[in-house]
Length: 268
Image (cartoon, rainbow, N blue to C red; front, side, top):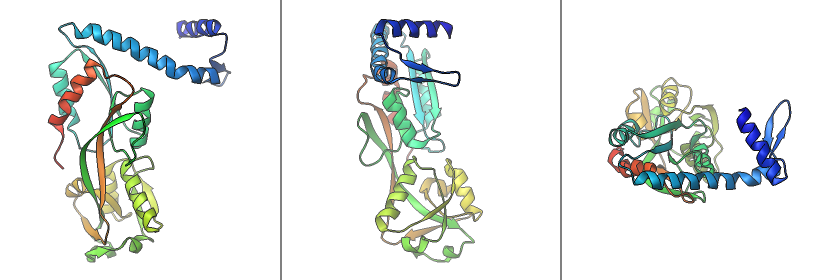
């Protein structure tokens, strides 16, 4: 760390300005530091591209791929995908990050350069700076426990659900955005009582009577004790995407991974 600090102070001397505000409690970027950060990232990416070009001429493909994904969403058989990549190119290092802040966090990491590729759910109007390819679209279905009073009804309206406690993902997750938007457009206020970042946990909470939920159909099929209800005039669909940066050239290592994705998309 002392070497890094010395290099930063040397750079500050050359630029004639402070890049960090340093106190005994924290270190944070100054305005000049924040302005320099995108250029510094671009320089690092250019250096990586130069290394990548040199390595491409060698027999062994090398490099690092930073991959982001959502937990418990089985759109791509990720272990099989990464296993095949390793078998073909054992010198490629993969760094895998499972989302803790949903698709919004993955998109932000793509834009900042912390991730090279992400399996995520993007809104209809995709963020600038991200190239996205749709991998699958799955229906979100309304589920209640088998003992819930609504379980005896074959169909309900959104307005019938206004007083019900919901189990849902936290804000920032794509499926939460789909449900929130649907209720907002219908002018129906709903109450989210429990937020969990895991589909199977959400299904289990519904099964034990702690709320109702809109869940992807593939999760319902693997959880007993749930009753699916039709929602009159409403069909919710949740799209999954393969996202990469549209402003950075993909490395050879990343292209090697992208070439294998289609082989591991799971039919939902």
